[in-house]
Each structure stands twice: as C-alpha cells, then as structure tokens.
Image 1 (cartoon, chains in turn brown, green):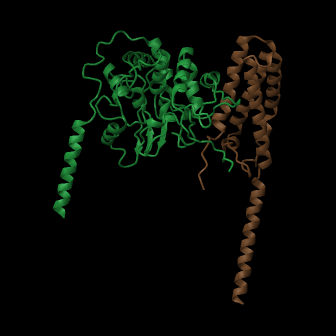
Image 2 (cartoon, rainbow over the protein chains, first blue to last red):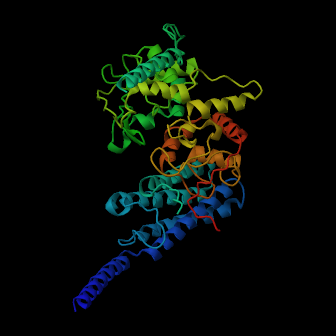
Image 3 (cartoon, chains in turn red, brown):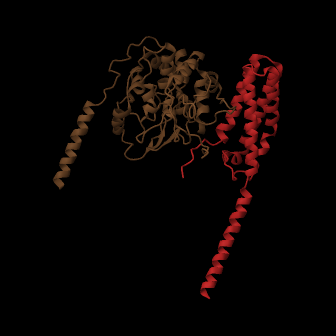
Length: 160
Length: 310
C-alpha cells in the first residue's frame, strides 16, 4: 500500500515537473526567429561582400547600387527579428541579453545601421568616390557598433 | 626534522638570493634619456594610437576620462585595474622623467624600481626605439591631466607579490630595443617592429602558457581563452585555421575598417583596436604589417566554434 502511494506521488511530482519545464521550453523557444535573424544577417553580410567586390571593380556601378539597395531595404526590417521570447532556442544564438534589457540602446544601434545604409545607398547612386568611401566608413562603424555591444564573443565548444 | 626544514628554508633563501643577483639587469641606465633631442609630439600622436594606449587606460564602459585608467582586466591571476597615465602630477605620470617612462616601457619597472605586472604589455613595448618612446612621452604630456586616483589590483595569492614578477621576467621577458633583421627587407622589419612591439598583436593573438608567458613558438596562432574570454583568432598564415586564404586587400580592409572577408564586421575587442589604433595607421604601415604577417610560419590551431563534421 505504502509502496503504491509512493510510486503514485513520485509519478505525480515527475509529471508536474515535466509539465512545468516543457511549458517553459515552449515559451522560450525562439528557434524559428533565431534562424530567421541569422539568415537575415547573412543576407546583409552577402550584400556587404557584393559592395566590397563592386568597389574593387567586380560587377561595376549597377552591382554596387543593387547591393546597397538590398542592404538598405533589409536594414529597415531588421529591428523586428529580436522579439521578446526569442532569447533562446534549439539553435545557438549570439545575441546578448542586452538586446532585451537595453531596448532603447538596441533600437538606436539598429536605427544607426538603417540610416548608415540609407546614406550609403544615396552615395552609391550619386557615384562620387569620395562620398562613397566616407559612407562606407560610416556603414562599417554602424555594423561594428551593434556587434560590439549586442553580440557575444565566439567561444570554443568544450570537447565532450 | 625541525632542523632539516630550517636548513631547507635557508638553502632556499640563498638560491633565491643568488638567482636574484644573477637575474636580468635593466636596460635603461641611470643617465639614459636625460639629454634626448627635442621630441616630436605630432609623431607622438601617431605612436600613441598605434600603441593603443587609449583602449586599456580608459574606462570606456563607465565613461571614464581619457587615459585616467580604472578599466578592469579579469585574468586567471586576479583583477587588474589600469592606472592613470594622464600628466596629472599626483595621480598620473605628470611627475615622471624621460627615464621613468623609458624604464616603464622597456624594463617593466615603475619609478621606484618595482616590477609592473605583465598585464601592462611591456614585454612588447620593450622593443620600442628611443625616439618613439620620447615622442610618445611628449604627446602624452600635451594631454589634459585628470586628478583620478588609481584603484588597487585585486590579485590572487601569490601572484600579487610584485617580487614574483621578477622570476616571471627571467623566464619570459627579453628587454631591449628591436634589432632589425638585415636579411629581411626594410618593409618586413617595419612590420615586425609594429606587430611584435608597437601594436603588440601577440599580447592577445599568441597563446600563453599556464604562467601567462607568451608561447613564442606559436606566434599569433590564436587562443580560445582571450583576455576578456572568448576566441582570439589565429592570424598566422595557416590556410585552413589562420588567415592564409586572405588577400592583402582583405587584411588591409580588416585593419582599416574592421570588415571581415565574408562581409561581417568585427564587434568585440578587435573593434576597439581598429577604432583606437589600426584604422589610424599610415598606409605604408598597413603594407608592412601585411608583409610581416604573411612571412610567418603557418601554424595549425583550429579555434572555430562550429563542430567539425565527423
């Protein structure tokens, strides 16, 4: 009798635990969002690669404007990828807690990138080398500015 | 038994004393740098950014004043706080002679003659030329003094004992100005001077042993335990794990803009280095750094965070 009682209560407790933890996991599962923001950052990086190549002559000025355009358009939508509850998921994220704990600063950093990429697009369309160079510098600074404060350093995986 | 341990202690003390007496002698003599020709603060300003003084000696996180110190460095040996190097006479280095600064940079000694902890990268700065040290000083002394007291380090026993640095120096410290390698080009030698000494790349990018000495046989091969945690990449010219696949343009881009070959931009400690130091280097110096980096032996050191496919 005693034994059965114990088994039942253990099962109940275990069940309770499982429910709580699975509820928690479900709540904090940002896997889809993390994947989406990684893809978006890669797209921006790809445009940057295209811009750099174009500045060195590959693809010419039409490629430069196309990539600048793509980057500026993506920058406008970038802020929506870090919703609350997407801090963690089954995919690793390097977004720092500061993204969510300092929303004003984070928004400012994203906005800085949006305006820098807008300025770069205008410079690319204008075609003046000096202006493009200056805008490129500002663009790089805005990328680094966000990475510096809101992206974790790379860490080596511990061997199991 | 008791007697034996007494003898042991006495012998130990004798050995330590002998080692101390035979140890490295400072390279800056009592009258060095006293009558150095008129320094050039404009050159000093360029040296100041190349040497990256600003990054460590300014507590950026807490919006501290330029060069007033107080930035925390968490190391395996404890927490160190950078000192005030503004020309304030009480709290900074305003009362220092030419020789005092030369001794600090070249011999790792403070004006009273005790040892600096090698958190201060004097093992790299030691190679700076006389002119560079004096020009740097003239620029430092042209800046605004800030009356901010230094914060004491918080170091684990026994590393807090400055005397212990003496033995560390015996093992890992080679003092004295850079000697050009005559078999190499002037550009290469300039690059070596910059990378090894002035811009002190190896302080972060070279792996260290358990005692914090730089492993010179694995120069710039990177480390998984960087000074502020995280990976410091391998920048030896190894094709797979280093920067062997990078073109000259790509290295120049990184140093002048912080941009990486894949379109990403550096974000952590290196973004500070780019901002304070490498983006201000003269174009010739960038070429010299690239020349030197590409001449190094490629070292395999895989620090990638991705798991390798089996």
